[in-house]
Image (tube, rainbow, N blue to C red; front, top):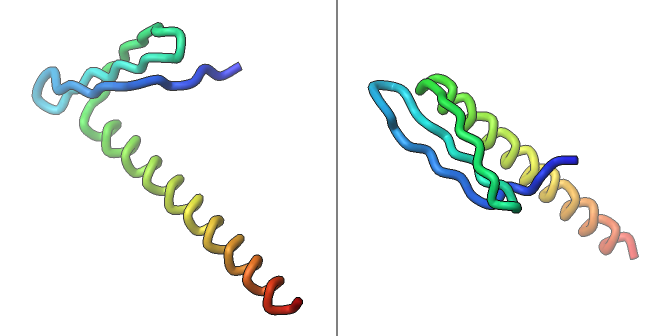
Length: 71
């Protein structure tokens, strides 16, 4: 079962290198290293996911408005 993310930090450790610290709901922290390309990929993926979610919400609102208009 997936644990809930409580907090995270991203720290620059060198030229184009970063440390990601992910802390779960139990206070356990896991550290990852990533280069700048991976950080950009993470950012892009999050942005794409949020945009898709927003589009789904807007589509649901449009459907709800159509149903109300039919009543």
